[in-house]
Image (cartoon, rainbow, N blue to C red; front, side, top):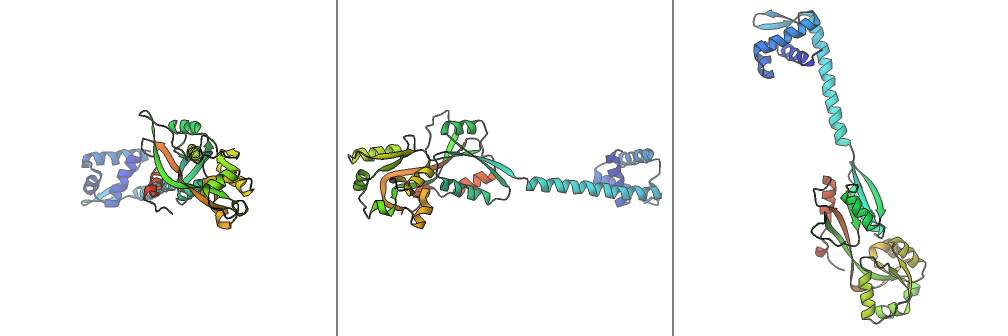
Length: 297
């Protein structure tokens, strides 16, 4: 069956006049009449009889109209269903996170995403080179880092600074022992430091040299979560941002001895220079207050 012919019949039957139907369908009356005759020929029945200036359905025409109503109502239902399904379809946001990144910071970022019902997330962790390769190949939509890679004119990504955290000397109450002198603590206690490739490790080394301290480095760790656990086990004082140990600080398991002035860790999101993959990611990145505007404690 030619459903265009059936649609033309349906419009004529609803309006009752060929002239009105032709106007609505943007057809000439003769062209519309030809389409109706083709449908009648295919069905083998006359569908209308003319009475005065109007058209009256025959018995076969009424039966055809009943079926047409069902057919087109089903078609409309199909369109509504597909539009609704598209609206409810979850977007996939693929997040890469450098393995040294604070889990607490990652959770803060993810919590902003999962507030949106139409987003499903995929999180992958790894080294910086691996994640940047995934970003360039469109296998990742955004990469979270705590160090900004070197870039040049050929770089295809942009960095969105999301937060900055002052770095502190963290340990158990027993190990700190009420002392607040940074030089005394750094020179007398074993230290848990990030590895050399960490974003703020170089600044720590510069500080130690400036203070003329030969540190007792008991552990170098590329995982912030492990640094937190080692500090909780009281094997030494850890140098890290407070966000890494926010739960331990609130529970009194760890304490901040002092901040290291001038040493800051930056948290950033890297995305391709082209348009962001979806509006939700753009909204989330824009929701972060620029770190320079934050009130420093």
